[in-house]
Each structure stands twice: as C-alpha cells, then as structure tokens.
Image 1 (cartoon, helix red, strand yellow):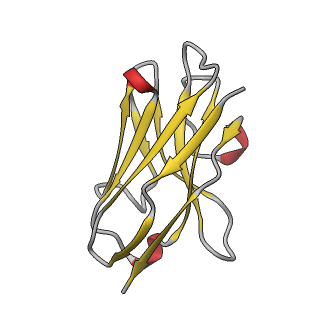
Image 2: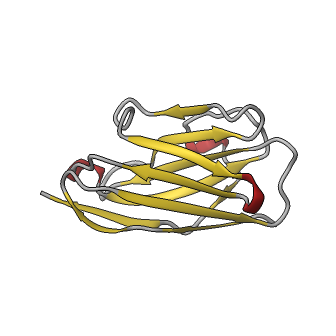
Length: 124
C-alpha cells in the first residue's frame, strides 16, 4: 500500500511563497511519477506539476509555470513544490498523487494513490 502525506500549506499574502512537501511511503515501483494537483472551492481538481522518477523531467501547468518549482529528494521519497509569487487564485487544497509509471500526465484520472491534501490560502 502506498501512502502520501502532504505538509507545508498555510496562509500567505499575495506575492509570498510557500513550500509544500509530499512524503511517500510503502511500495514504490522502480519507475513512477508524482504529481501535485489542486482544487479550489466549486472547481474541479486540476493538475499543477509533475516529476518523473525516471529522468527527473518536470511538467507544469501554464498557470504556474515560472512561479512554481517541483523537486525530488530520492533518499527519503519526498517531493517538494516551491511556490513563489503566489496569487489569490492559487488558493486551493493541494494534493499530491503518484502513479506506477514514469509518464507524467497532469490529469487526475491517471493517478493511483492520493494524499489527504493541504490547504493553501493566498490573501490579496
């Protein structure tokens, strides 16, 4: 069983920064992808960023490109999402998820395991 635990959410002013972390435990395939998703009130869950275990490639939604950075610490199976220049529209519950493939789609339908989410609130 794979477990994911997010941390690092909170309240920040517009223009500020937060770093989210996702700790992954349990069975991990040799090749996998870890993605970050978010869901704002009344909206569908959307893909934010993804990193592949194979070649370390990273992917970003257009809305966060050049502001967010995803990174991986292999030693302890932790993935970070550094979020800079935050905007009120970034307010959402952020989830990390993993799939047993190194391919990195930003669609929720491809992911097998999910964390419980962490709230990010950006005030204007």
